[in-house]
Image 1: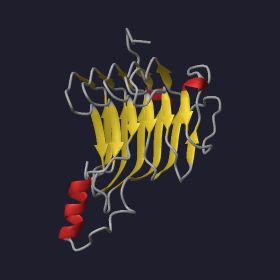
Image 2: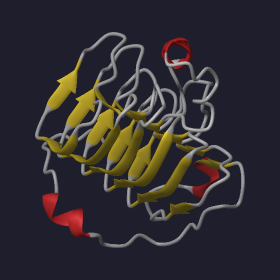
Image 3: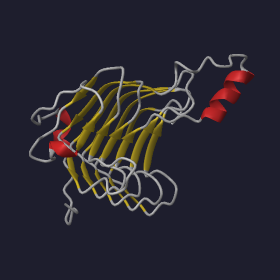
Image 4: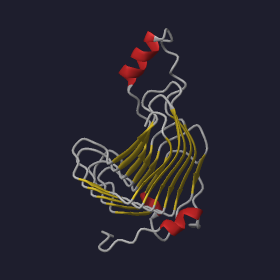
Length: 212
């Protein structure tokens, strides 16, 4: 968070938190980049999501080159993996006003680029397996994930939910793993294709009793 870079988060089991995201990458108001989250198991997060990305405050804050891969994320009360568009509006406005720049943060909030979500298993996350609701994100790749029995709750009633976006997404899904009828895409800015191999495949997580 807040300017971190060149970080690996791996081989953790995160579970039974209440009101806290399991693994949270938030740029806040600083450039934050080159972060990999892999080989983690995140489950039973109460009243929150499993893994989340955000730029809560804005200003100079942005996320670049974030890799989320080979994680198992299941039985969380909200989303499995979310690329978030929320902001901490009160703090953003307060800091902007203190700097004499009230209103100047409007166009700089939530910036993200080169986000990769690959080879994850998402199961029984109540508000969706993968949710992308950040309209400022660019160059997002979602590929080769396994999604099953997510989206039981009403908020995002889809395995994979892609909100309308003014920028470009790259979205590639292995059709043998997810039914396209369970994908919600608000605008035709994506490509649905067969899965492919990427360089991170060698980090495979081998779990006994994976819940799929």
